[in-house]
Amino acid sequence: MTASDPLSLVFAALADPTRREILSRLSRGSATVGEVAAPLAMSAPAVSQHLKVLERAGLITRTAHAQWRTLSMQAEPLDQASAWVEKHRREWNLRLDALEDHLRTMRTTHRTQEAES
Amino acid sequence: MTASDPLSLVFAALADPTRREILSRLSRGSATVGEVAAPLAMSAPAVSQHLKVLERAGLITRTAHAQWRTLSMQAEPLDQASAWVEKHRREWNLRLDALEDHLRTMRTTHRTQEAES
Image (tube, rainbow over all chains, first blue to last red; front, side, top):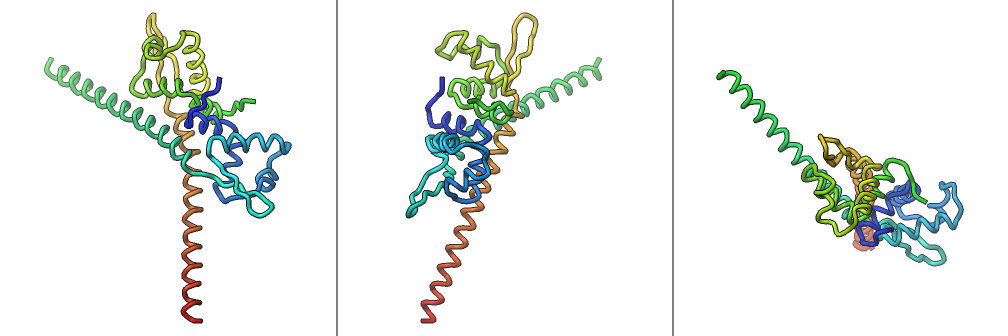
């Protein structure tokens, strides 16, 4: 079962090394389908399938220029993915900090009790 | 076709709202399977399936404490996912900056030429 909410589509699109490679290429500048496909060792339909997944997630757009079509990366869905990951890393780190504080307090209390006994 | 490299497993695990909800819960502290399952409107086997995907991606671990098992979030795979996304957002922003510089230079050149003509 595949989730189809916007954020799930972005993470699913990123869950493939070929699609990440295509995004890497496009993060350095727009390119034609041929330019994107050239370094990939796969058939044109396979490349086309990956482009569709990236397009559905909003990570790339196609623009028609005269007779050829250009692919461009879109940063906004990446911003949302990044925001989710950062929020949870932060939450987790706060928890680790709190745990560390707690252990420090316990240790100090323990030492005080030892000194008093 | 599902990719099985470590980074793809992490992104695939994040590509589902229920699994992100489970991680949200665990980012605030370890919990038992029952505690994690309680707010989710789904069967125990469905929850178990989601936990397996998160575990395979290294995003959670299970620890046995006496007769019950605790689930804990692991931050490292999130760090790697974050690093990938940040690298490409940065690359993209550099490109936008370069484009802006280029447009500014063009505009200045154009104005100079206009003033000279």
